[in-house]
Image 1 (cartoon, rainbow over the protein chains, first blue to last red):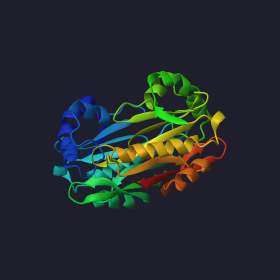
Image 2: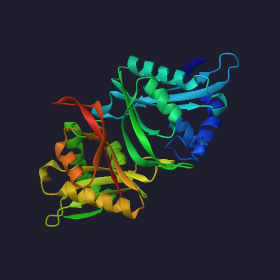
Image 3: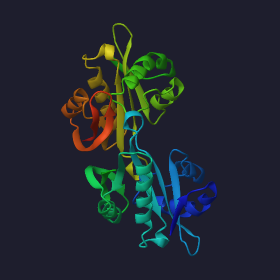
Amino acid sequence: MEIREAADEDWPAVWPFFRRIMAAGETFTYPVDLAEDEARGWWLLRPPNRTVVAVDADTGTVVGSAKMNNNQHGNGSHVASASYLVDPDHGGRGVGRALVLDSLDWAGAAGFRGMQFNAVVETNRHAVRLYERLGFRIVGTVPGAFRHPVEGYVGLHVMFKEL
Amino acid sequence: MEIREAADEDWPAVWPFFRRIMAAGETFTYPVDLAEDEARGWWLLRPPNRTVVAVDADTGTVVGSAKMNNNQHGNGSHVASASYLVDPDHGGRGVGRALVLDSLDWAGAAGFRGMQFNAVVETNRHAVRLYERLGFRIVGTVPGAFRHPVEGYVGLHVMFKEL
């Protein structure tokens, strides 16, 4: 698998799984029905922020994407944040792990002192476990802050890793 | 003191203390030198979000302001957030408390199930104490996530109150 910076021409390959993941409504605090134009603006970031795609080395298929940016401004701008999408048709192959590691490399090289996730759905156990294995810890959990379509009101974790 | 919805014409009265508070860089994770046009866009929210001003009943002077909004989108949109500015020349008179109470009233009436603050600087002890007295609790603290100009790297609290 190759991780490379996303170009505008990658968007048509990202949009189908972006839309599917948001429509499922189980893991992101994004609108569940964001229009494509708006979605592209939310996802494809410009420098100094960055968006990447994960590409299957054999087929050239885009199987995931990540965006990474400063989490706050001004005197909080030394902590990064990131979000990850893995095409559900290509799960279980280490795509998410590769994207997280890439974003940590980027944040470290860019001089950030930490990486923070603001809203990790507590029932997204696969992601929580992955983040913990990569050195993140749960700083706290906002109770009932996410309305899961199946599990009802569940917590949102704030997670952090020093760099 | 009267709290009322902010009109565009209130901005010139808000901007001087907005700029002064951001330039001090001790309490907000905003750019410390945001241009006025951009600052207005950040602060004056449109419905369904809301910005108010606190006005001295005797003099008609704008002594503070608050903005309030959904903290997340989609399946996280039932939790509100808010930010507060009190003109440092009018501190210690209950302006902050009145603004917080107004935002809680608004959030409750609008059907939000909680109010979350994402980045309360831990050395802003006056604000932390006020929020705690009004029923917020510290959900967690992101270590070193704020570079205080005097105290160095300090934590950012995530605070939450159920409604």
